Length: 270
Image 1 (cartoon, one colour):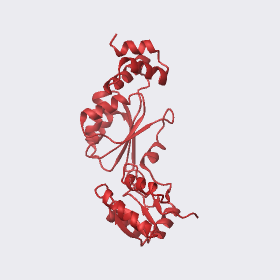
Image 2: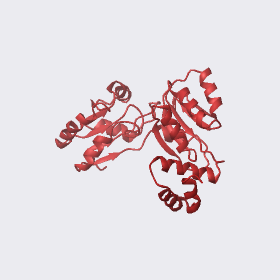
Image 3: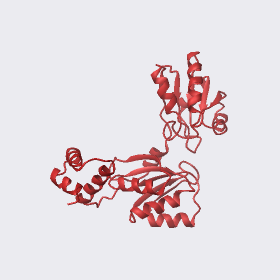
Image 4: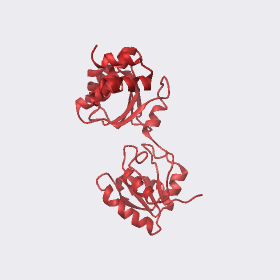
């Protein structure tokens, strides 16, 4: 097996059995494991009798840890990076150190493994394979509303916490009252729950049942959008970014095949 200097290792998102044999082998063979929270990672290591030492690596100390990791690798040590659950760098720390190591020529590789988005979507029936993953939503209501408007013609997926899920659904409802949504909760665990319904019914469900666990959510596109509505939405996005009517008509005609004159008229309000 080819050896690397730095391994990105996915860990289970809930069920400890969801780890690959190769991941266990790597975690046992490296000299050090960089992890978000050693208390969380230690539970996994204890379960599989992995005795490798841990080094804290999280979003608050990423920059200062990078040089330490570089020095350890230069000294010939092998290091694995894990997050508390799932795959590092996917809404988890790791981007800074991976960028630095690749620039310095270290051998970096990633193992396949657990990921909440893939686990969730493999249970959800969709019209096609296209979707956009936006990670965690913005904090403010205005920014969430704008995102929902921007993605009304695309399926989009995001992570959400139990203390925010009801309010987030209400914000989505304020923009798209008839939105169809699927929600995954406690994936791979004993109380896993998958719900698909309109946004109003989902709000009522969680108002009657206290939200627990981490959430993965997909908001389905509005397939009934007229062609005119789709063009208007895209025009508004480009206008907000400061593009002129001439530029907007050129961009949308080139990208989507829309009539240039029609787009131009919409851009100037005719």
